[in-house]
Image (cartoon, rainbow, N blue to C red; front, side):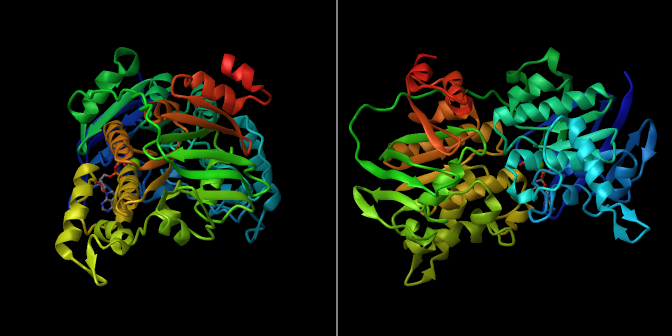
Length: 507
Ligand SMILES: Nc1ncnc2c1ncn2[C@@H]1O[C@H](COP(=O)(O)OP(=O)(O)OP(=O)(O)O)[C@@H](O)[C@H]1O
Ligand SMILES: [Mg+2]
């Protein structure tokens, strides 16, 4: 075996957090090497060190056996190391080609941006990736899955030897992720080494050769995936055995309808959608990314309201013009993009959690926050979700991706809604915490909360939901009861162009 990159005794600390402690392992050339670990284990920090974005406090990297000193990400790119960050870093208002060359524009005569070259090289790289996306298209008009591919295209134009992908599939459906894996396998066939971070066990076992497990900033093991199994990897990650979450048959008792939508649509991205959600019920909205699920629930939440159709809450017709109206009616929404509607990154964990709970009277009286009640509420969520933070005052923007997700979820639960809509609740969340979130959703439902959950993770959909609605191309394609539900049936409804409901039910 040839070692491409050797990580030796790397340590990195932040105020209040030792993110990496003395991490050492080798990355074999031409392999797809997974890095796994719980939220906050240090994965992204390690990747930022390797990509030249963070300087380690101690330790060194060897590339082809020679010490590698990086002055920054540009230096790393020149030395053949490229990274696709955990969060999309693209400019929605620029074109695909402009995004790909952002900051590294080819210049004609040293001054003007050479648009023709930019466009041609983008087109060539996309073609090599086997995806057909127009380089002149405005980036913001592309679905997330394609934007993710543009991020990869951006890192490939410099022909890296080592490509780092930090949770590239967390916002993709399994079908969309397949396109990405085709690209990964093709790169590997051309000798590129890939460092791959993911919380999705199955995709790691299906697509990677080796896995390095980190726990609490320390290296636990590096092992060949062919010589291990999922249970062992989970055990190495969390330091104990983890019981899988079982499906639970929904109760057959009649329950009142909490939310009822009839014929809602924006005339474009979602059309003629009708369904009910009962108190105490968890209904999943499944479908491919881009099927219109997020648009539908944002519509219900009044952001913006649908152009057609009616909505009733607890049997009474309502008009929801903006999110504040929805919240007054007891509807909470945990959005897909945690930065948009979810979190104030520049504020602390405590402030984020109490902000939305303020109106409730539980932690405030006469407009004044009651500090003891607030601290109790905040601490209980930090414990329950195992939010990993040096203190409750830590800025949310400095937490690891998965921990930010837990804060968003906790934040909306703190508003004590009667109906909760969650869009990709466990995006980027580690296996142990996922199980806790599912348990919590069940407890809440048992307490009478109605939950509508969007998820692209099929095992997740099957595990948590009592009933499944499947959307395809902006329309409801069908409904599956608890007993009918299976991954195959969901996919059949979500992906097929033309399918009669009979065929779906029989398939
Ligand atoms: N810039 C920063 N300032 C302060 N703390 C930070 C910073 N970046 C990361 N941390 C902390 O370092 C620890 C490791 O974070 P890191 O982002 O590497 O975790 P991760 O393994 O990628 O987790 P996830 O699966 O949630 O993405 C966390 O406790 C995180 O809050
Ligand atoms: Mg991370």
